[in-house]
Amino acid sequence: MTASRGDVTGAVRDRLAGAGAAATAGEVAAALRAEERVLGDADVLAIADELRADLVGAGPLEPLLRDPEVTDVLVNGPAEVWIDAGSGLVRTSVTFADAAAVRRLAQRLAAAAGRRLDDAAPCVDARLPGGVRLHAVLPPVAVGGPCLSLRLPRRRAFTLGELVAVRAVPRSGAVLLAALVEARAAFLVTGGTGTGKTTMLSSLLSLAGAGERLVLVEDSAELRPAHPHVVRLEARPPNVEGAGGITLHDLVRQALRMRPDRLVVGEVRGIEVVDLLNALNTGHEGGCLGKPCT
Image (cartoon, rainbow, N blue to C red; front, side):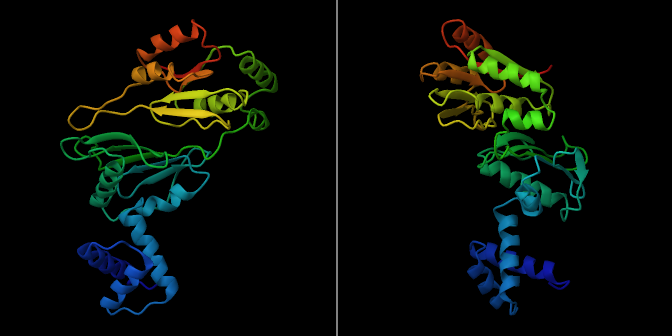
């Protein structure tokens, strides 16, 4: 496209917004004709993709979220976007037009998760459809401008053998861990942020017998065991009126009534540990939990 690409896209965006139309290829082509612009099919499709990302997707972050190697996308204002693709944080060339564009994206993503993000509620922590974990902070809490943190769920669970191959787990340790799961012993996976607790727990749960029923209780659904019988329960924060919240404590009690062969709490932080320990001590063998270091 020529240097006028941004002007063309902006004009089409305004026309679609005014008409309440979706950013389909047909609607984009009609808006371009109304703007008296003549473009080829490839250009129409490119503008349609760009507008869909801006209106219903993640805007300029969309290509980063599609990258299968990316696990985290961090936005520190309009001119600073970082990613982690497995080798530590790397700054990208992606930018936003201004702080208002970051704010609009953050608010749209929060709304997609059913959460509120504005001056009265400047922080949000939610899970987006598809499993992406969203955290956003607006000024004046975020001093340098709106900040976004997007954590992508693992596309698949790593096997214990793969963890051994990349030297994340020693071979002797893998043998011990596999025996632990086979013996249906209760266990705890603990460690700091980013140390691989979820990856390890997913790998171990994948070793459970195919005839076992796994009931997973999580604050945000992140565990991805490769197993044929998995039931997932996810906590829910209260709405803007302060009602409707469902805690991990609530879910552990519900899970105990769902005939779990293995009861798993993805990340224990509070009183839910009491119910879990009671369950493990009264016949619910093979349960496990994750716990962040504090």
